[in-house]
Length: 315
Image: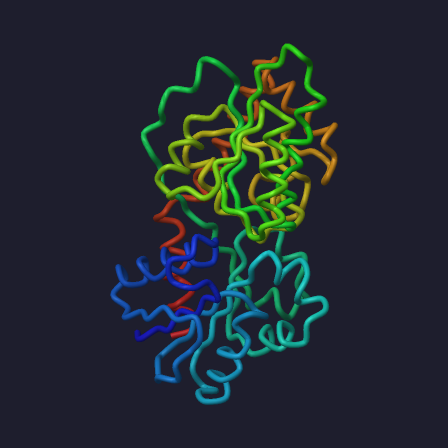
């Protein structure tokens, strides 16, 4: 098939939507399809549109549906779609109705959709690359936060938790991700000045980010909203246990009974889990074991197979 894949993230962007689009385009080409990745639809006729983001890609979705009402249109919902925009934004709501099928990135997202919308929605877990795991640092218990500095990510919650660790704690925090505003960059630098156990590296290459993650003992994802974070897939793929904010997007990735959740925006509770993971080997082994049980969901073969079945449904 001739497929146009729409993503609001520009070429060269390290935003998650661009990474998803690039990975899906590669998989679809492997399956024999011809795929063009665009930020805005150029109007060329295709057999199918696959669009990421209900609100930000709405113009392309609307125009395609008007020009080719009988052609299939698949919409992949992001975290801001599921947990914000589709509740309040008319354009996002219209995109849901225009879609032939929809994709969500973790199972808990189905609860956000009306029954009629659930029936045309499929869950596609994102896969992630693996790297040869470097030995962990012996000098400390390294914890990684991997994600751009955005308000939705609650980016400094783990840094704030450091103040509630015991003085003898060996936890050190390595934060990877570019700042989405000068104010957030300034805040990250201020945290480094007042908290010697916190280090912000800024934006790094994907390869370096994966190596740092794989080297760490633990990853923290502190987000306020997530559609299904690829950094969680990266941690699972590279056998790094996760401490996560208790939000639907994380629960959909790690399971309802996962032992590593803390209440959203609660740095004291986060500090307790960090301390427990550092000092209680049985608890750490439990987190690692629970993460291993989720690993089969995020394989590349499974993600590609899910896309293949979805394309076949609408062909």
